[in-house]
Image 1 (cartoon, rainbow, N blue to C red):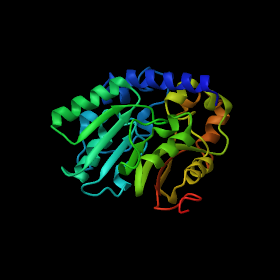
Image 2: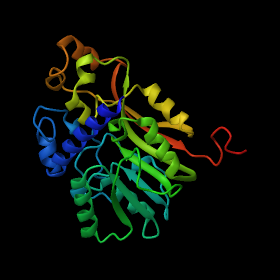
Image 3: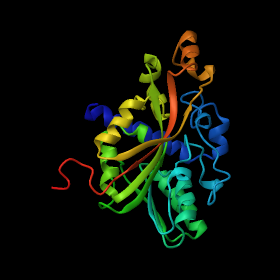
Length: 279
């Protein structure tokens, strides 16, 4: 992807999520497509229910995720946790319930309005060990080896340069640290109209890549113990799909093993796992 296209997509995503940040979860879920009716996907189709998780803060849940990475992240008391694409703070507050007062949680988000919303939520909760920083996941505003655990929920697929993103995750993790991320991946060939839609990119679909390629990027970044903790198909209603594909393509897309999937992936940064690192 060339630099111009990459920056254009980043601006598209930033503007879309700025609009979403200014709405309630109810408004996003009630509309057919989140921030602008019928211009993108309904986020609630992908979202999982956080309500039973300790530390859940309804005001911080905008319904934008596609999994529950914090549930699978093996966070321990006292850990430093970094949440990528932290939004209004939902996963950060769930992580904080596990790390406790002795831990530290850092949320990173690309959108200024999201950062403001998250900081206000943290202030209301009087959390002094949860902070939010505005930044690009391809170039995180963090020093190396600061995190015990990295989590992310339906965000990395929006990053144009995924190799750089996972390289950055490797950099900020401590030795023997790990990540658990929920994300959207593809299996098989998607119809051209769906893949190329800029609005669907901001809705988490057209920015996704093939599952095998996604897992390969994680391995190439130096991670080991790569494990799929959860996988589920994303069934898109025909009224959404038909904005982008033919009726026959829509039927095929929602059947079988070809289509759009949510996966939650775990991987570890072992003490020595990159070629030459022990020399």
